[in-house]
Image (cartoon, rainbow, N blue to C red; front, side, top):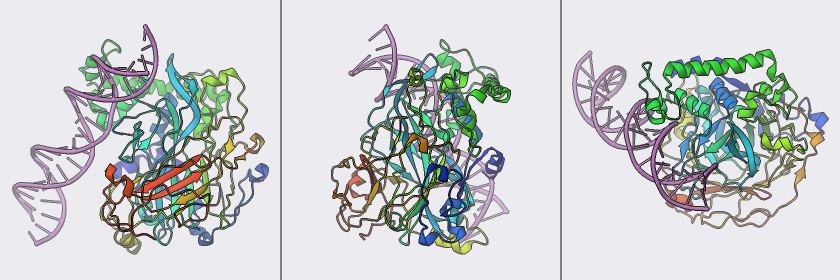
Length: 534
DNA sequence: TCCTCTTCCACCTTTGAATCGA
DNA sequence: ATCGATTCAAAGGTGGAAGAGG
């Protein structure tokens, strides 16, 4: 494990916030006309600025390989893990501050895709978004020292296409493009988030975008998975060529040995690298800039026909990479950075054959009594041991023994997302409603409310951006500001059941996060103790 | 007919309990 | 009694094939 960690350092990609302080404008902010966000009282010390946290994507090179081929992720009714798995290295955290780490997977655009002629093409309008769910790292909340000690792995995150999934897996539509996002939330005094002063960051790694499929479409992806995923070792061929792969699919594919696969991968990679090196991709900055978050490389040639983009039309905005939000005391939301640049009006017919922009909507992650109580067990989702680090024993001890813990699974329900086309993508402000109550109630779509449209001109080119925004004030009651009932209510004293038990669904401590027409509903499951109603 | 999805399968890794020895 | 190493079996992850369904 240590060896793995050490060997991958150079492959990691550092996602870095550009804000120097809470009121600092990003280089392009002024040009964007974005306002500064007020400071967060709890974040006035430099070492506590949540935007100073740096996140490094583990195995970035592997992600890049997949991305270049057009990453596909299998979704099954029972839930399937992501591969490559989402692992990050955290730095810059306050060692003693507690954070909650969670991931969501959001639609990258409003299209449905099909794999035709060895390339992904738009096949129509996207289906309504699936219930949005958050995957909370099982170690959450934990101190910064804990998170920074080793790789943070979300490998147990599972994707499903089962709309009624009882296991808390992230629900996706097949043949749609998605973008995973990592949220770092500073836990409040109750080891929860969602309270008034909650601050959080959202990290988006462009190369982790994928298309969900029920069976692999692109043979290159299949080979990459087989070659790199240890669980798929059974499909690798031996050096002698006695392959299960060839046995099973001999009529379709030639015999492929390990060495051949390796050679092909190298060849493919070299080919791509060669193109990169030769500047072929210079005309396709959407590819090149995908890995150059900080360069501010302008985007995209929509007419590109290079092999890469024909296999996997790139998002034309690799710039939606990094943003940081912060709570604003008055509950209104501000942005300090630009989330994306690609907002050109899409009029060209050819655009239909290419991926469009990454998500343009705002993070649904938000505040409110995300309350955590003592939990007796955690799933080991972090690399390495949990041993106390010398020199940080206090923090560690506190981390592991006193910290109430939350479970991996949070349930959320998202109303069909407003289709944010590439054209003048509406920018969605949202309010949040968190509750740990628990009676199941129907999810009520939040009425479409004011939509903050961001003129295209406002969305310049940024390869990295930090956005500070406010989190809504908490609504400890059972209704949010719009009068909607809570999504779930739990009777006082109702114990939480172990996660992955659908029967516990109605007994989850819940968080609902609402945006206009976008509603997150997050349930927390506990493996041990009861929740306390606050 | 085509496309997508589900189910089942064999093969593999991972995980944790049991065992043993120092 | 404790700790670490080893062994073993069960659990779970994997992609492919076949077939169902729209």
